[in-house]
Amino acid sequence: MDCSSLIAKLLERSVVDRWVAIVTLTIAAVVALATIGQWFVNRSKLRLDLYNRRFEIYSKTLAFFQRVQNYDPSKASKDDGIKYNLLEIDFIKSHRESQFLFSEKSNVYQLLEEFRQKTFRIVSHRELRDEMRNQYTPPEHIEAYDEYKRDLEWVNNFIPLLEKAMSPYLNFKKIAGVW
Image (tube, rainbow, N blue to C red; front, side, top):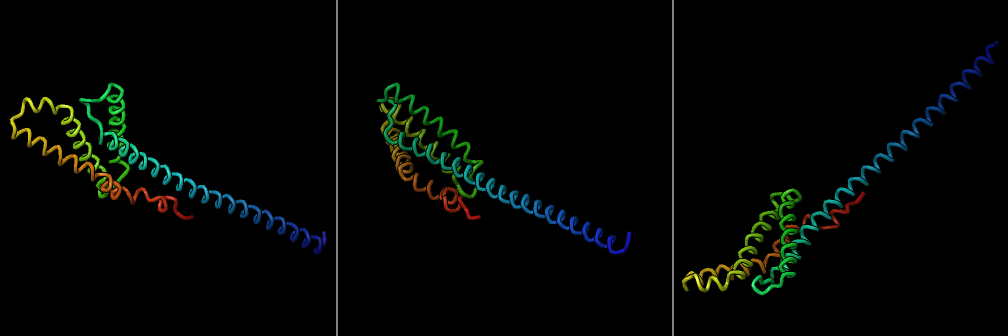
């Protein structure tokens, strides 16, 4: 084998090695880009899932709020009572879940807890209204009615408070993000 054929074989081999290296790097780059793209997709999916769960808490609270506004257990039919109980169960589950989906600073859980307590007293007052008239003295009855009115006023102003507390978590523009 002469020197020129040896040089030709070496050059030929180094070209093949270079092409293999280039193809390997190209495949690695494509895989890296696909991985980064998948990370962005998964991150967006997680943010959307959190948004949906938080919005569901808002929706169930709003449905319960609307039902409490005109629910009077002393006048309700059996079906109305069942509907109320189902909405109350959904709200209580949402209220409990809120402590895991909102920061403590947001005050969402505390607002929902206060709402739960006040709506319970409102509905209880409506349910026991006739019994209270017969069992309470006039000053006790007036005090109970005043508490009912204060609770009702607070509940009537509750939704704007809740919306303000939840707004950083339900701002869809922030949730969607930009890649």
